[in-house]
Length: 222
Image (cartoon, rainbow, N blue to C red; front, side, top):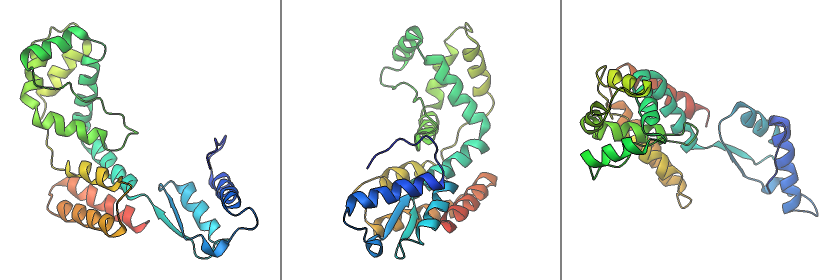
């Protein structure tokens, strides 16, 4: 069932859920046979699921683990504001700029263009961090060969001198990718989360502590 909602709240979600069950069982909903409700962790989804358990006594609500890991990466983006500015600024440098793209290919023929993360697309910001971590000196060199004809170029040069990039948390990218696989078993999903927790426990520093706290908070809501 697919429906466009004018308002998205726990009441409209509950209604569309019930409507879908009536499509599945037009002669009478089998309330005891509805076992699992999977959603993101938005508060209105959690509230809707809690209300639905009154009608569906065996219903278990599970919030998406891949979305939970994405929320952890959002926490990192807020913590590394300088890195975030660098990624956003260089995105502007190469956006609709053929001459600058040509310069990059002239200097480094095998280097792909910098990724253009979309914040709502899970894991793409961390993909960009990994790219710049692996190609820091190359992209810095390309930017240094560009004239200060645009504010984005000037700002990029300043940001490159500010701090280097680290890829301590890029294992979260693969975790999101693996959790999104349609063939993933429950046991496989749990192993991915345990692996993420193990790697986070080996990370040190302020950002690591924030991420660990965020992950504990998210998992308690699952």
